Length: 128
Image 1 (tube, rainbow, N blue to C red):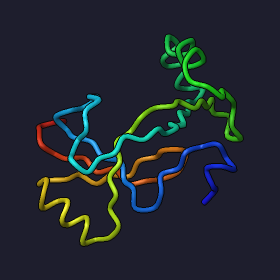
Image 2: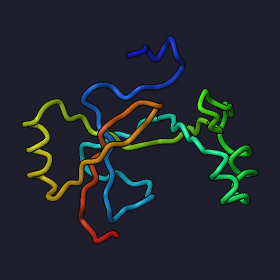
Image 3: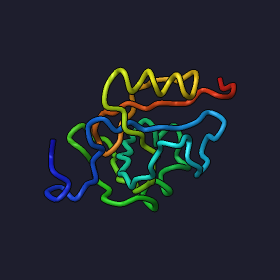
């Protein structure tokens, strides 16, 4: 894994997982007692088909974010600085303790800082 000092990108360390709460979708409120707010880089990629299908989004894509570029696959790419909530989960026992404390948890793959990570969603409300 690249060092943050070398790349300039903050990286989530091993054991840190993104965390959110279904009932607080898009809220800037801690999803749980253990969550810590960290600055991250979201790498947003769009294809030419996307812009053809949704032409109204093209101006906003290039107006917002930074480091706009076209990658090797021909995708339009930008970096978006944002805050995210993370929790430290070091092993299976810690994950089970977390689930016992908060109830139903959805685990899903996510990407942050252009690297795969785990996202824990505290499922405390209905969603489609």
